[in-house]
Length: 260
Image (cartoon, rainbow, N blue to C red; front, side):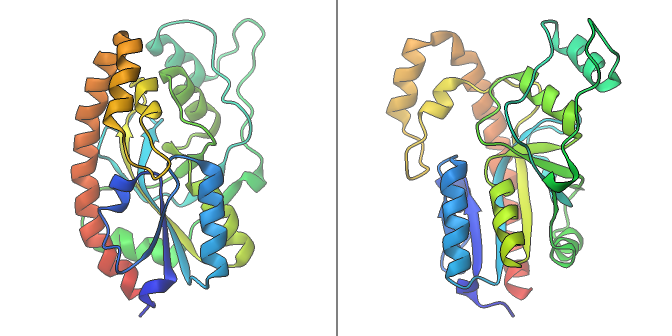
């Protein structure tokens, strides 16, 4: 059985971390900051963890995944650079074009990530979770990005380029650090904002350095950009569904991770 203090878990938000028993794991909250997630992973490795877990929410980029979808990806893609979006047009038109890769105005298909960008999770750990969680699970790849995907066009463009199911800001740095140190890792993520949702800037503005949401900061941001209120309500509804699923996942995943 794994030593309790030897399982390192990295999340983006404090609310995600709260769905796991903190007495059983070494948990670090990055506050949606890839650099902090990288520092946390290195600190945990230096501290002697036997495994790393990237855990929490993810942005859905595959249109087939809705809020609350559970992902146990086989592969993490460390995406480099800005996400290149297609030219203007409706979301449906963009999706049709970028997924069919039909040339338009001299543009060819998006360049896929290089082979070295793909990092496989620990197969045995993922297999145990997949078999024992007792939930419908999506596999495939998850793309790591260094900044939030704010617009629908960014999500769809990243999906076209990588064919990943979702994206987050911690998994790629966890994958890199774990692989470099020879430490097994796994990714457990739940879709919070699907591909057809716009992420309001007010939501990002409300994230404190400790990974908690500052309601006052969100309110001030919405007063400055009241047109984001509708997107904020939609995000809250999707987030509630995702949090309900993540709590269930946390309750079931915790004993499984401790048994590995």
